[in-house]
Length: 148
Image 1 (cartoon, helix red, strand yellow):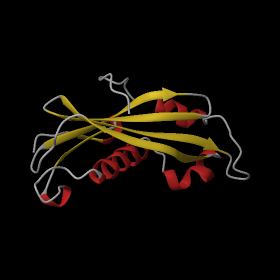
Image 2 (cartoon, rainbow, N blue to C red; image 1 turned 90 degrees about the vertical axis):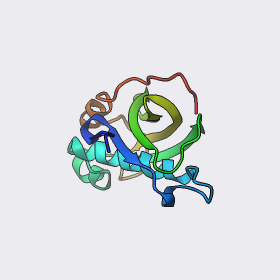
Image 3 (tube, rainbow, N blue to C red; image 1 turned 90 degrees about the horizontal axis):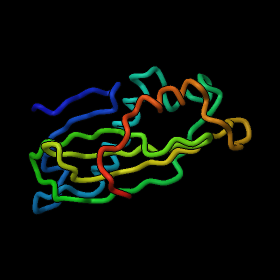
């Protein structure tokens, strides 16, 4: 497989197998959510942040507040796909990570996960901690103008 595996860059490549598809060999929608989460959590981990330890390490927690996918082209069994995390929006108390799924550098699916930052003591809104903000800012800008 020639697809990249670069978690620190927010980039993961994979090849679809039959377990990723419906009965006719077309990608089943839920695979994109698994790969978005995997891309996101391994990207954070590559930068020294574990989602489950943010309260202890950063004094904040993140809460997923929305997610979605827009399917642009059909993906089939044995296709090689790259998932690239991108900075869709960075605010002061929340951020949105986009996920551009490409095959041979063509967009096939655009995913998105929005996160709000909360104080672990009372769940009130709080600023993105500096260390997390620094990491979020390492994500590239979106390459494709597709809204989810």
